[in-house]
Image (tube, rainbow, N blue to C red):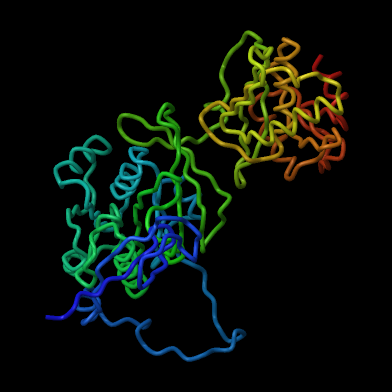
Length: 455
């Protein structure tokens, strides 16, 4: 009887070792090595017997870069504008897209909704739910006739056999961690199983020119579970995020070989599925007529999309010895820096006060252009004076207390004008191509100028 071969794989990065050790040499994580039984492949991948010979299987010769002919990529649109925007215009034939997100956030709902909207033939493979469960959700999402096939299976050999019979135009796998192949003896979800199953699906996608969508679980740190090499293998990595206490969901691209990674898709979770949000600024700004202190509107950008977001601040006298600094959707270190600037450069004594900051809607913003709105909200709460509803802000605050310009300021101004704001505060160095906008533009160079405008 042959001796069983075992290797130790790092559950964080996927590095392999012949024997156990406490720390992974590759990613420096502790206690992440797990023993897995491995078996050498003795036959070709299971999909080879069900697919036709393709030009990609023939031997390639080196070609001078000047002689390589490039044609435009024919994308497959998904009838979902938000999803198309994040991908860069639609699915690319032969591409592999990995969608990650927290449990219950709506990953399966999103891809099932997409599969029901396709005109092409779609095979939806689920290793987590039965066909009856998926049918119940599909009836809630759409009652139209469609060309979607449902398969509940976890073994890749059986999946590829059904793929050979159905010949789908799009393949959806829910989820990659539930699949297992006969060529590896470890359990489903292990590093070696995830890597091997993903490699089979990727090779199938490239050789048959079929787009493949994979759902991936995430670990407690928020990254895709399994080996890090999985994210390097696929063409696109999407993150589906949101707060369960809110109905809004945000789709971001962390990696995209066929488009930008700065795009953003916003959805609203409804009883019948995910609804596209065409104008997110209306949802992110509360419609409160009476003026409340500590609220300011910022003009930010996510990719090429301008957004108007509401920032709320609360400044109160510290009851305990150490003042509290708490934020939601904003970096605490950035808040501490702005408070230090207000203390040092503008003379506001905030060192002994609690400061709480919140970006409404449950989204997280990294754009430095919201600095001026954050400062305005803090000063408004500190002075207990409301900022007028028709004014918004778009500028960065420097360590010297100066107001710095931000990129694509004209888009921010046009978005504010479109949403009915009457005034916008920008940096004095901001360069606008024209002067006659339908909104009044205030240009400031330091925080003292901002105080004169607000109060």
